[in-house]
Image 1 (cartoon, rainbow, N blue to C red):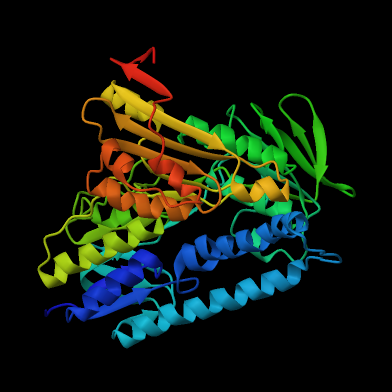
Image 2: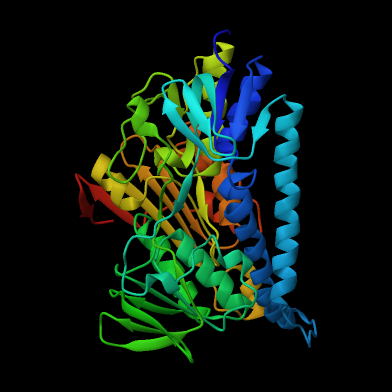
Length: 463
C-alpha cells in the first residue's frame, strides 16, 4: 500500500488494539500503535488481571477459616497489604512487557504518546507534534471510570484505577455503586481486612443480572460482613480529622478512610479529535459501529469498550482480530456477540451465559425454569454458611437452553464450558442425557429434571 506513512494506525495498546495490530502486521501491513499510559490496557494494568489476583488473595481468608473444620490447626496467619500490591505490580509489569515484546516481534512500531485524529487519514502525536498519515485508523482506547456528579465532595473519592496501589489497606471503606466492579471490590476488600459498606440507588446489587443470582450474592455479601445500604446515595462528603464524613440521602452519616466510586465506566473518547473526520458519537461517548467495526467515517474503525457493546476483554480481542483479517487479509467473518459467557468475580462468584429469566420471558413467553440451591460438600465439613445456586432457563416449546446462571465456587469456569454447548444449540434434553460427574457442584446442571417454574404465554403456570 502506498501514499500513506502507515497502513494501519492503532490508538490504544489494550487487548483489542494490540491484537488488531499484531494480526494486521502478520498480513504484511505497516502498523503503528500509540499508547499514552502503559502497554496492555485496562485489563492487564488496572482491571481484570490485578483484580483477579486480589480476589485470589482475599479467598485465602475463607480457606484459613475452613481449614479448621478439616483438622488443620492454623494460627498466627496475618495479611500484608504492601506485599500483595508489590506482587501484583510485578505481575502486571511482566505481562505489559510481554505485550510490548509481542508487538515488536510482529514488526509493529510502538509510540508512547497521546494520539489525536486530525483528519480522515491523519493522526497527530502529542510527543513530538508529528502528523502520521494512515490508510486505516483504529480507535481502541477502551473505557474509563465514570466520574459523573454523584454528590458534593466527589474529589475525595478514588476509582478502580487507584485502589490497586493504595499505600495502606483502608480500615473503613465505602463503595458507591452496585455493579460488578462494586461487588467484586466489596467482597475482596472485606476479606482482606477492610470494613466495607456499599451504597447504591437500586434495591439490590447487579442490575441486569438474573434475580436469583442477585439475591444469592446479596446474601453472600451480607454473610461476609459487608454492610449494604440500598435505595439511597451519598449527599455530601468532607474530609475531617477522623476520616471522610459522608452524609446520605436518608439523613444518616458515617466516617470512612477511603471512598471508592464504582458507578460504572464510560467510553474513553474525549479529546480524540473524532469530530474532525465526522465520526458520530452517542451522548454517553460511545462510538456506534456496524457489524464490521466501521464508524461513520470510512477510514476510522473502533473495537472494544469504546463501542460500549459487550465490554469484555475477549470480545475486544475477537473484534480486533476479525477487523485486521478483513482489512488486510481478505477475511469476511463477523463477530458473533450472542451467547458470550461472563463472570462476576465476587465471592461467591457468578458465571452466566445467555438470557436471564426476565429477559427470556419477555422474548419467548413459554419457559421452563429449573433452579437448585444447595450447600456445597466442602461447607458441610467446614461449617461455612454457604450456598450454591444453579439455574437453567429453557424454551418450553423447543427446549432450547436460553440461559445458564451459576452462583458459587468456580462459577466462571462452569460458564465458559457450558457456553460451548449453548453455542451448539443444546436443549434441555441434552443436559438431561449427560451423565453426572460426582461429587461435583456442576453435576447439578445435568440432574435438574423437574421445572421449578413454568410460564405459558408470559404468565406463571401451575406445575
